[in-house]
Each structure stands twice: as structure tokens, then as C-alpha cells.
Amino acid sequence: MKKFALMGAAGYIAPRHMKAIKETDNELVAALDPSDSVGILDSYFPSCQFFTEYERFDRHLDKRKRANKPVDYVSICTPNYLHDSHIRFALRSGCQAICEKPLVLNPWNIDALQEIELEYGLKVNTILQLRLHSSIKSLKQQIAQASNNKKYDVDLTYITSRGQWYGRSWKGDVKKSGGIATNIGVHFFDMLYFLFGKLQDNKLLISEENTASGYLEYEKARVRWFLSTDEKNLPAAVRLQGQRTYRSITLDDKEIEFSGGFTDLHTLSYQEILRGNGFGLEDNRVAVETVAAIRNMSVSNSRDYAHPFIAYL
Image (cartoon, rainbow, N blue to C red):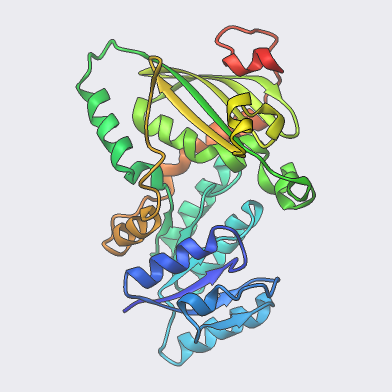
């Protein structure tokens, strides 16, 4: 049984990590969050030591290490801009790291972390769960068997409505979240790279506080993408049904169905990590480079390959 610590226990994604630790028959022994709204711990690990101060959490992990009861893994579910620092903390504490996406905000952070991995002889594992989804794995096989000259036309649309709190939290601060494309899009961009190969072109057509859209071209796909947290961008039919989220990915005008099968993907990720098969730093590079470029590039005046939703803005 492995011993885990978790940073960011009050966050949205943390319960999926708690569930994965539990379902892989391991133990969460310590958790950290400046917010004490972590009653969810009782559902998984009621005996877990909880800290609201980083310094006390650090001291606890160090005491366990000196008492020959070390923590094996630190799971990181903290705000995006803290990932780099908290990964370093995990490695320097003698623990393997498991970090939520986006791994880091900038590609040069990956280079520095690779040096620290080598220094400590430990691994940074990341959660790229869409690569483990059965529908995505099947689609990858289909694409691999197609003609080498085949280039698909893909439309990616993801609208997940958020209230006023979103903009006032760290998620609304580009310096902390990386912006819309990074915060809600990076796992889709990783999926596109996983499916369609080397990135060849990257254009930004819309960049607003709550909405971004652009064009990506890969070895085997031309992708028009649209991401938003503004409910006004939801299709009328979706709003009439009272839904606040809309996700669609089409491949040559055919819908890719992968709305189900998400429940156990974090557990699958942990199973692979514990077997030594987790996705590492280099697996994240293209997606991180993609979103970093989007964050820093100028908006193009061209409307070539513009996503259909742009016409409605």
C-alpha cells in the first residue's frame, strides 16, 4: 500500500484523486488547502491529517520521512500557476509527483523540471485522461490505419457556463490560470496532438475574457476550435433544455461520441502510474507549447478556417 499526500484538497478536481487513491487500495495520509472546506475527506479518508498552512504540511511530510514512514506520492490539484512550484516541492521531499493539467503554464518550466527529475531520481506523472478513454483510443487506431495522405476536418466546441465567481477567482486571472485556452482547453489540445500528430499551424481568431477561438493544423487534421465560459454562446436548443454545458467534436462532419466513460479515467490514470506507465513531462510538451503560444500571439484578421460559432458573435 502506497502513502499519498494531496495538495489542493478543497479544489474541484481533488475528489477524483481521492477516489482514485481509494480505488487503487492506497492511503491518503496528509492533505493541504488554505480553505478548510474539505469535508469530502470524510467520504474517502477520515483519518487523513489535514493542514491549511504549507509550512506545517511540509514539516509533517518531513517528520514522516525521518520516522521511516515516508509519503510515496504527492498529488497536486492546486491552481495552475502553482503546479511548477508544488512539483518541485514533491520531488525535493523525496516523493513521486502526480500533477493535474495543465502541468505548467510555459514550456521552459518543463525543461527545468526534467533537470530536477534527474537530480532526485524521481518522476513527474501527469493526468492526461482523455488518452485513456476507450473511444479516443479506438479513434486513434482508426486514424493510424487510414491513408497517410488523409487529413481530417475537425470542429471542436466546448462551452461550459460559469458564473461571476469564475472571473473573480484565480481562474479569471490569466497570470494564474493561463486564460481560457489553457484552463479549459489544454486537455482537448493534448487529445488532438495524441490523435493527429505533429502540430503544423496555430492561429488565434478570437481572444476575449470568456471566449477564445482559433485554428490548429496537425499532420492529419485541420481543426477549428471554440472555447467559452459564457452561457450566451450556448446553442439555443441547449439553453432551452436548461443545460449549461455543450461539448461537440466532429470529424469530417461526424460526431465523435465520448460523453460517457469519464467516471473512472482518473482511477485508470492512477493504475497506470502505479505500474510505472504514467504520462511524463515530455508527454505534455506539445499541449503546453500550444496554449502558451495562443496566450501570447496576436489575433489574426483572417477568417479562413473560422469556427462556425464565430458567425454568431
